[in-house]
Length: 586
Image (cartoon, rainbow, N blue to C red; front, side, top):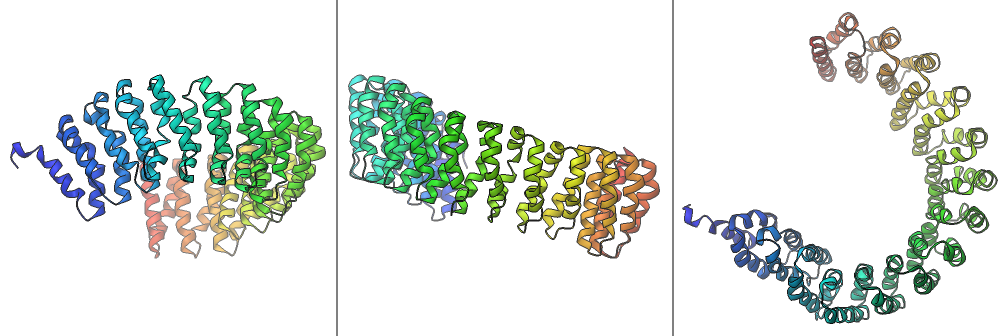
């Protein structure tokens, strides 16, 4: 193609591809917009590309979404911040489409561009755009406009600021619930840019309208606004305006709104401060913990530890603990599970005595829960309790439950216990561990579930690291090596895996004298899977043992395996031999 036609080429291709029936071509074309803009240069991008995109009436949401995203980072390609206003028309069109994710992305891109625009351009181009969208006939434009006020407002002159507040107030009372929802979602962002005197008057009156909305979907978004506005107001205003709303919401007729309050309560407490929390929000929280909807109780139960941290221990014991006891026997397994995941964190808050008297019985009842997730959630947080009540009490009360769970019928519970064993071992000390838990660790190596056997092999290695090679040589290695004669090949494979993990911990001498002979012996196994695992284990042992041992013992075994009738055995044996050659050379 001639040099003269070169700059015309990209835009021509783009136009062709954007009109192509194949959506993938159209998508690729949109994603290459920045490349095309660079080829065209800034001026032609402003005069040709952007107008073309404004008129592009593609009906595929995926293409429109990609376009909204691309335009958000397009300022450098149109000549910098002074020309940023040319990007507003195509994005304004995208703010009115029906698909929500396209509108959201267009609003996000407009916010990004607006944040970089010069003040006079914001007044001249951006604020009129916001006003046009807010007055849009179709609700989608009004929904989008709510997300732009916080960018437009700070740069507006005083008269325009008053107008923008009035427009937002109208949006909060719009006929369409979707618009009111958007106004409620964005109220916190807008409020953060409004001056303090107007915040108390204008913004609070909008907030009051939203909190009394007849649609629960609007009210529950207003709950989020409580926390955002609470951070902006003075503490006394917060108590006067926000606190009554929270208390009312905690008794709202819609469970979704109560659920939202339960979810946000910790943030709301931070907003109103400790005193009002103790006097007004504790009763509200207790109501939520005893709500008749399980979803609300789940959300409230999940915040029990965070909430107790705000209170003093006496208040927590007096008001919250009775509810926690009720929740531990709740009819919904999900409520009990949510409680189990956080209840351990209450121990440091309540202190040793209250934990032993009040919480320990609840832990024990949850550890015996019929639902595996509840038991799992308790096990995974046991260390928090240990720090408070000490290991003696923990071992007396919780160890029987742990031993019982080690044989739980749900393999995930057994897995959680195994992962907790090294931590427990370090806290219990070697003597206690040998008495109570040593046998369990061996038993898991013969579990029916592969994940348990795999975790058990890792557990054996971590215990050897914790208590040292001498202890392992006495208590673990002989029992592990005995199992290599198990009639089932899968269990023999687990032992090979355990040997490969133990070798680096045990060191060269023990590996050569105790572990290596067992592996070499296993190379005579009749099952190919065992033989190729032997090759893998031998490969992992090469860096650990002395080169003379590699020459005399490991290589002859691998040479023999490399001539095995089974193709996989030959493959892994050859791979191990190559590895040994590299080690010998280095």
